[in-house]
Length: 146
Image (cartoon, rainbow, N blue to C red; front, side, top):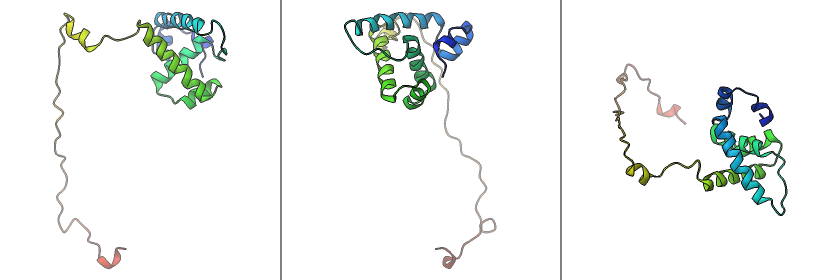
């Protein structure tokens, strides 16, 4: 388990290698999540055991490393169902914000950018194998096979 208190001390290159995003991107995500968290818990609601930064780290671990909810939850000392809810909430908030969404197919078709497509021929080729003949094979007797 790597908590944010440890990760924030890393250099920018090491931070990106661990989290998968640049520090500035991470901070933008935190700003969006804190705003949404404040709205969500404005009147009431149980506070999470994990800080917003640690919650985002768990989501990045899930997306980047393909760790299971059970493994991440065990690392951070919370229930698997809570881990699922946290990651789902982070995913929904970041998608709803629109800052980190990718352009759709129609947008790509409208743009003036030209794409170069390279095709690679990956056809199957036969594998050379030795030919079967009576000298190379051992024949089993029918009575020995059960």
